[in-house]
Image (cartoon, each protein chain N blue to C red):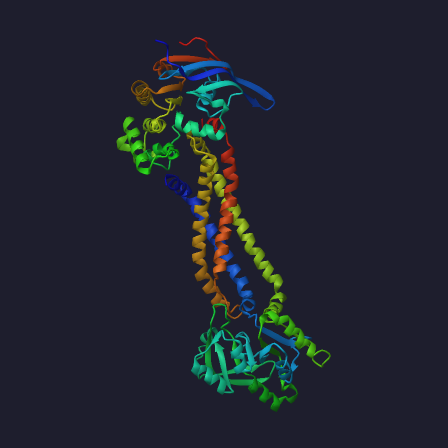
Length: 385
Length: 230
């Protein structure tokens, strides 16, 4: 107990230096936590994807459509349970800067495949029965002040014209990682309009979402689908939802790698700062450690004091940094909700913060501890005298 | 009546230091017996090797050759770990500059060596308070070193040295950093520990007045100990 008291007092003996070191650690942990959260947000689509869902799209590119007739053929393939479909609509709300993902989907099958989008029974009924109805994520609805019954007009970019929708329901995510920024409306509404205005673009589907009976057979089912459309006018690529989402992330992989690298650099820098603090503290107290040795204290006691002090300083900074990460992430997430709709500090990020702090504390204390343990008592006492 | 067996028995001890390519002999073929309950002063000019000899006796430095037996143990054969354990129970240290831990109060400083014993927290506290009473600092036990005078700090250091009831006390210039009055108080206290508690004391000093308190004085010169005790 006395030794714990001693290491606590040692840690705060040089108050300004310790305070500045703790501040540095807090900022580093805050930066590390935010950067890791950005990376997690980047992968949120991948993380939220289900192993029992496959995505089928045109083999050439996502921008090329597939005929709606594929729907029935896909349904007949062994292992496929549910088939849903949709198109990227790319609509703009008032101004281009008001970005949120919007899709034309088949509501019934889509909601069957995505139970993570939660609607009240009344809202669900309203959405399913109103062809002009739309279902909006809580984040986007809050941002633009929409509520059920409101009429929302999107300006089409891929499908020209002004498109009016009635907000049928505002969904919330079942899980923390569910994207609550999306906007869904009836594919039939889009298709009927296309039949009238651009018949050549009617009955075209951007992607199929498939629910499969057994996730373990995903590869076989995907292979069977793609084989059935081989040598057709529109060949397909079928992959798991995760692989599909990863395809988007991999386009920006260099940015993610850079962010990850910076997050580790921050930790390395703070490690050097803490190591410097510990080296200075241990050097200043060499005579005290020599006295401890003289009194009969062993190497493990001395190393314990130095490592303990390093841990007290680092973990204090870590705790402050973690506490600061939550409000900072909230503010950052709100500001960046257009680009990173799923932005929250995950338990994994907190664990990584603590792990990074433990590594920093350990590495920072190694050299001072080794020096103190190896200093000879007579030599140390001569230096004191 | 035969004299009591020596508590410290040094035979043919030599010690040298390496300075670059030079070997500097510090102690040469030292033979010395110190009886239990003795109060020995080691004197000599700077660089004569008296502190080195004290360090060897206290087990904080290693001789190049010879043997040093304290009590019944040949401390030259002990490993670093065993030597540390032996020091914690057998030797009390009094330094010139007190060497108290500044962030611990007087009682906590005295309690430090007891952490290496099996005593409970309450027992450690009681022992530390008793040792501070012995050095007449019972009323200052909650004071930090910075709140104590040099003489008081040295008394705390003496309490720390005696709290484990060691075989012997080694003191390296214990009055070297004190004014005359404080030095006298400390010498009185050391003499009392020797006379009343029977502690064996080995003291290195430059100060003839301090040396006068000892029962015997041995002089070292260029690493050679005078043959005859004074």
